[in-house]
Length: 304
View 1 (cartoon, helix red, strand yellow):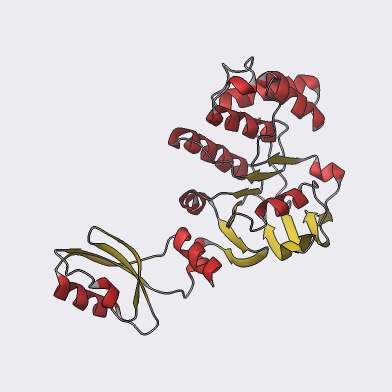
View 2: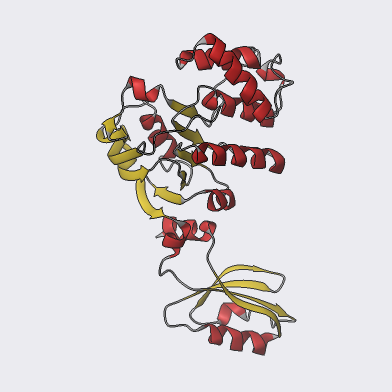
């Protein structure tokens, strides 16, 4: 069942633009996703993520720009090989799960006999083998999310476009979803997914694109996004003098709770200055320079 994807297959967007009236939803957007890469696509609500995904899948037309797969312009035959998982539920609520997945597989060109085998395989893989005869409307949100993922995967796509696949999942279901996405990437599938759960994106993705107001504001590995950014210092102080952290020049408080403070240092500010102030304020129990998380990088990128 593990069908490899051609090593040369990859997704490329160049200069995409899409407006709705006076609102520019996607503005000169470009990025590439090679075969076998897990690619995180993140942004605030309304940033243009869903519009971009719909353009890739052919559900919307771009006003300008191109989408190519393995160097060729996207057409109906290529889009048939896409697995798309929309953020809103895209299932028939009164239809049985097994029948529904077989229907989607056949729509994507799978022969009936092959489609039936694929449905059974994915239901077992996603822990739903006992729910083939259940109607979607009778299932929990998490199980409906698994069925929605199965609908995107059942035809063995060459490209996965997933809009908020982790929304509403408990930790066990999220682990299962992450394992499936890693497996698909391992067989060469480019996987593009959006999520507001930035810790998951940081753990899973080789590269991340941050979009804001329709424009790409950052793209690369998390290490590349950190680049030459500001230094971050975490310090824990017992019995600290109230307000000590707010009065420290050249060090912005990013987080603060129960004596734990995370600072972003301005250029030219040395960590020793923070340590000296912390020692004057109380008893220092922890002091270290830390790498900014993707969530912190995201906040910095969209606030500029």
